Structures are given as C-alpha cells and as structure tokens.
Image 1 (cartoon, rainbow, N blue to C red):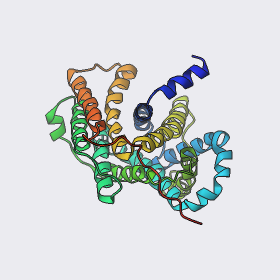
Image 2: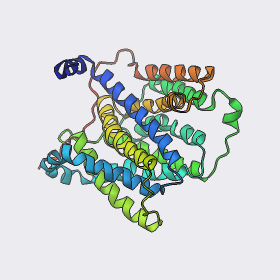
Image 3: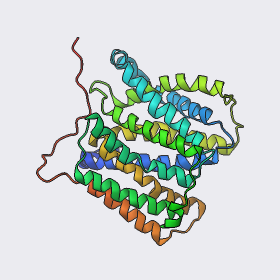
Image 4: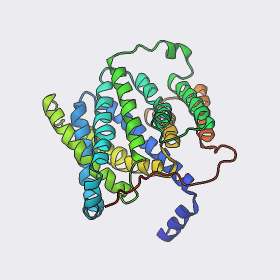
Length: 322
C-alpha cells in the first residue's frame, strides 16, 4: 500500500479505534515478552534483564527521538518529578519484580495476578479523584476478568480454587500496584511533553535505579550470548519495551487509563493464540468461551453512559505559569 494511502487509512479510523488497536498491539507484544521472560529465567538475573531491555531500548530511541528530547529539555527539567515517577514505577520496579516473581511462581498465578490490573486502575482512579468510572466500566471489568480466569484455567474451577500462593505471588501483587500507579501517572503528562520524549526520558531514572540494584544483588553478569538469549532480549527490548510502551502511552492519552486498562485482559487471549501457533497446543472450548467474555467486557467498558456528551479524554495537566 503506498505511504499516502496508508496515512489516509489511518486517519480514516476514529481516534478510539486507533487507540484500541494500539492497546491491543501492546498487549500482544507483552504476551510474547511474558513467554520470553519465563524462558530466560535461568539465564538472566531479573534486575539484569530489566536493565538490558531498557538500555537497549534507550539506544534504539536516540536516532529517532534524541533531537526532539533535546529541544524539550526545558519541559523535561520542569517535569522531572513525573519523569522519575514513570521511570521508577512502570519501567524499573514493575519489570524487575515481575521477572523476580517468575522464579518462584507459576505462569498461571502470574497472569491471574496481572488480570487484576484493570480493576486496580479503576479503583485507583476513583480514589485519587482523577477518574469517575461508570457502571458499565465496572461491569465490563468484571466480565472480562471472568473471561481471563476462564482462559487461564481452561474453565477448571478446581485449578482456580487449588492455587498455591507463594512468595512470587506477593511480588506480582506489588507489580500490579506499580503498573496501576504508572498508568495513572501517564494521565498527568502535560500537553507540551510529547509521549515519545516522556518515555525516552523516563528510561534514564529507570537505568539509574536498576544499575545499583543489579550490582548489589550480584546479578550484573551478562548472560551467555546464545542465539536464543540474544533474540529473546532484543524482542523484549524493541517490541515489548520501545514499541509496546509507546503504543500504551498513546492509548492511555486517547481514551484514559480506566478504559485502557481493560486491554490487559487481552494478554491471556494472545497467550492462548501464541501457545497454539508456537507450541502446537490445542484450543479447547473453554478458551473460546473465555475469549468471548473478554471481548464482551471490552465492549461493555467502552460504552458511554446514556446522556453523556462525546468529548476527548483529558490527559494533561495545566502548565504552571512562569
């Protein structure tokens, strides 16, 4: 398709549709990273894996965003608290604790914990006063959460009731809270701070936190450069970090963190698809039912309350006077 035609196609889509596609793509890339991270757990220390992913992502950012970031240096200096908050919560701590959790918990427990993210974002937005979730958003979250549980457990109530919580599950709970804070902080990005610049800048404090942690925990040893390790780390750095986080920031800016959070429930859907394509696993009826619940929940959460006026989601804060 010619470039001009592809641009016309993109602009022909509504902003909500573009945001939905961006958020779905982010969930897809993170689903792949979840599988890759689990496979790397015996090859790379959790802090080192997170340090490598963001160091490589930062280097990849420089040719495309470096000049723009330099032009925005005054804005970055003004918003340094926001940049540090984004880097520490969503980039450094969240991924380190998630990777750490994968050493002691199962993939089933970890994905179930992550499925709580949409609900915690709704609760966090309501408690902080930054959002007013509608009844349909609460209902959609509950419906898609049920779908995620069906997908993950293959519809087995015994599997859900028989979960054995371990230390890694506690790390996952903390990770869920950190991702909630990160998603809510994205709403405070001012209009004069481009999303790609904010993401690139937030990598700096993330690396500043991760480097001493990797040294202190004895995990600063580089992994053996096998083709699998190199490929997995590059995938996590480029697709699951640089691209996915940019898509997530775009989606949050377009429709708000409450609605964007619902797309986390697509991760079990994509996980089932990837397991079928890459591992040859069979799709069972319960997974199809679970996927239907997830999509029904996404639809319900996107329905505007009756009588509500259509308006663009406010994702910026007022610029202080100088």
